[in-house]
Amino acid sequence: MFTLKWAWAAIAIEVGVFLSPLLHQSTLGALLAMLALHALASAIVASGSYVLLPHKYMRPRVTVWLLLFLFAFVAPLIGAVGMLAIIWTTFRKESLDGDRPEPVTVPLPEFDMQAKDVSRSGQGSIRSRLNSHVPSAIRLQSLMTLQAIPTRVANPILDELLSDNSDDVRLVAFGMLDAEEKKINADIQRERRQLDQAESDAQRHTCLRHLAELHWELIYASLAQGELKKHILSQTLQYVDATLALEPEPDAAMLFLKGRILLAIGEYTPAQAAIEHAIKLGHPLVSAVPYVAELAYQRRDFAQVKQSMLRLEKLNVASRTRAVVDIWTGRDNFPHRSDRNYLPHI
Image 1 (spheres, helix red, strand yellow):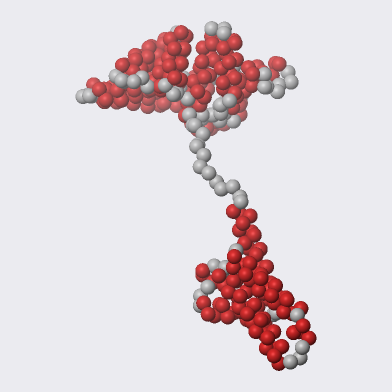
Image 2 (tube, rainbow, N blue to C red; image 1 turned 135 degrees about the vertical axis):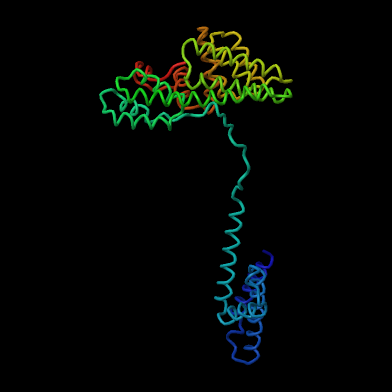
């Protein structure tokens, strides 16, 4: 910027020369004096412009400097002013760009797999195409689309089709459910064999944890009903307790799973204690607080339910959970109270 000021000063001198009495003299000395002052001003402007050029445009040095000098010398005043105006505009733009905020690193939002929002778009159309009045060929095609839907959502639909009037639909639905159950049971048998062969507490802990999760998957995927469900829940709780017994410090995920199992069994007080302990150990609130609210609802403690919903209101919850939160916090926009019945409730 200091060089740029010198160049502008040289132009000011050149303007002064053109406004001086030398311009009106017709002697040789006056001509030479004007040419010398004009050449000096052009040289200063060329030097200032050269210094401000990008490095890749500076070579060959002499040729580039002479080009700038001749541009300023041949076009008196106009050439120098034009060069410096371009340079000044460039500097001003760079100065403005430098005032812009620079990007900074921000932490990523917490992602909780258990709180992921499962898309349920299209389930209504699938159910309508599985209606008994629809031709069997279309119903069988619709059954195949259930493979792209999470098992927790698809399996209850398949379970309903086990009593369908069409033999083909019943067989396909039973086959899909049976294949899913066999897959999980095969994983359970593999983990049990590995548990029998475990030689250290670390290996036993890993096997017991996997067994607890696999047994819970049978419940979560709606593959066990009635007395079988109660038996599997009991087994799952045993594996969870055995896993926690091998841990020097209780794991938040295992405690949270224990709370969900106890909630499914109907033991609300120990379920509350397990989930709150998991929260203290760092389990994500976005997946734990809905169960705290559900436990409060089972106790008919509606004030506690609303407090839990106010906590969820500040979190990034799934859309279905958000709908429930809006109802409890009074943020819903349903014009008719009966419209709320279409939303899932705790």
